[in-house]
Amino acid sequence: MKPQVDPDHYFKPSYDSKGRFISYWHQINELIKLKPTSILEIGIGNGLVANYLKQRGYNLITMDIDPRLNPDKVGSVTNIPFPDESFEVVACFEVLEHLPYEQFSKALSEIHRVSKKCAVLSIPDATRAYRILLHIPKIGELKKLIQLPRLKPPKHQLDGQHYWEIGKAGYPLRRILNDIEKAEFMIIQTYRIFEIPYHRFFILKKDREKKQLKCVRSF
Image (cartoon, rainbow, N blue to C red; front, side, top):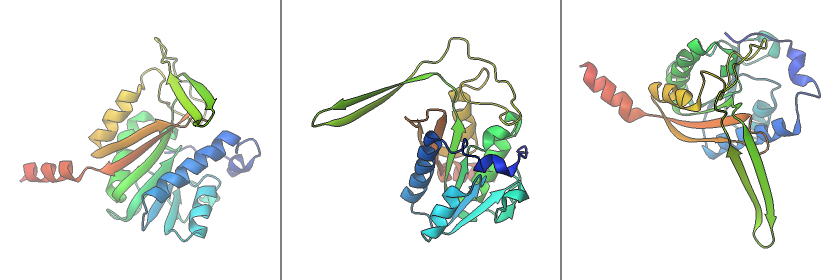
């Protein structure tokens, strides 16, 4: 269960940094690219992404565990109160790290269950990274994000919000990718945002072939 915080937290000037606004852009852009007829956004935050998409005609429903944030539906990502395949796309940005990792697979299974086609996630990635930005005349900008994982990853300290983060001890990226695939998602793409590498995105598609194979084996 996601710990509840003071709703004012999402509306403080310090919350919406330049990097976070760039992350909002990626959230919106990834959803628009999928051309969904329906979207479930899990974790409403300050409502910026939901409001932007709703104002542009997208059929989007918000869900959050905290009723004080006024979501369209109150519910937990580990027990989503919607029928199977209710939404073409499920979005879940900077939410899953608020759960103990033991609940990660359950949350993924629920996201998979209510999604008809795809899911878009973002999860904090604390892996050390350096950014290189070059401006080349007549070519434009060249951006490069270089990751340098530590030989001994730091342990994660529970700060009242995040139970875990990618790149911390016990949570390498390969573990997260394996658990996503075990939830029968195909990983179409994963990337970190250049301007805010702390946010790693995952573009996922329901692996229907695996689901069909599982059904065949069950008979």
